[in-house]
Length: 198
Image (tube, rainbow, N blue to C red; front, side, top):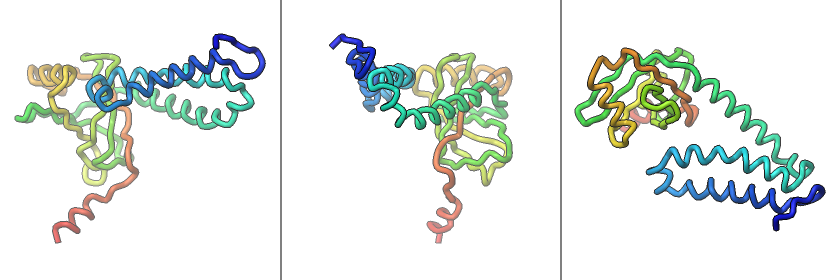
């Protein structure tokens, strides 16, 4: 079981790859994913260990069938990393009576998204490593210059943000990074509203 063959299948490399895959799989259960999202998120960086030891397990000639897909994934991940390094201007922040926060970001007019798209938000003054997913509440077809999200004050990160924004002018000195938006390419929600109103 612990033999590492130089030619053919290496059992130890396969076991390491399997262990990394099982750890990633174990954190996908809804209870863990919802309560400990950071554990779920950062555990999935074990995909590097999984792929490297998978290739060492099955050999390069067999792994070549999956390497093109992995190569595209690495390019996508790199582009997302570059996007997440840019600071976004927070236009306004509004404290709502239900202990929720509305954040409005400036955006380029060409950026297209739908109200069901999602973005990952990072606020370095609260935590440099924490990225939180939120659903976009605005539409690029009705609001071409801004993107809006709502954040309910429930977890420790969102409670810290709520306290910080309620104590001073929210748009000042708050650096925000946004990754996304991701989601369906187009949803004509205005057409759906017209259909239901008739």
